[in-house]
Length: 279
Image (cartoon, rainbow, N blue to C red):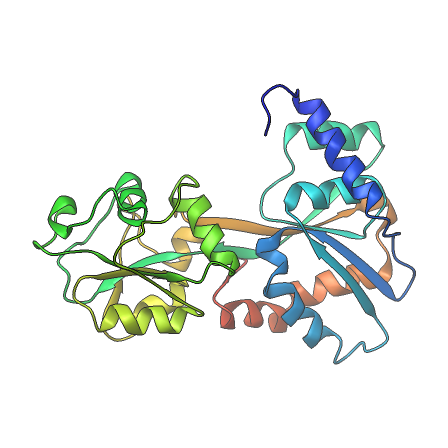
């Protein structure tokens, strides 16, 4: 963000951007969702597809440009649901109060990423700084982080995936990935397979996949990559995912869809896709 602009003006621009999108709030059988790429890239389309097996009459209008965009659209009445990978901040809460809007914040689960190494690697813990330096290339030999004398080989998601950016935000302070000893893959299973076959390999995947043969999830700052630590808010590479609405204007179909996402079937789908279901 340009530091010359005060925060108030920044959020004003977000609101204006949402208004210019020109997407009116839904009618009875149409649900309009704006917001987080983390929620919208893969998760919501799959959930919507399953929901529409029971409600084929309900249509969805989707656009994902970030959590701030979603909150701005919701405050301007341009969507029914703001998909968010964080809580509304102080400025967004203030702007909502000025518009007599009360956020109804429904937690649907968490996005999390585990760092995995080859099962034979003696490294049993990494700090936040070490993970950052490994993936940015500042560390290039395992001996620099307590491992054997040998090169680090990085296995990551492809640049068009949301996880490529998500991990960079969560673990790398938004710094670019290292250029050498790096291979990209289109899914977590391929990353896990590559790390399992390479004693010098390191990558990332969904927490559920750390139990695959040949790899192990590495604790970060002493916190293990397990569902419990994510739900306790202790694991650093995780974001709570939310579907936010205007409580005073929440339609029946909107509430029904959110209840489906929070239902046993919806939560099972989150787990199947590598997300952590809500507690």
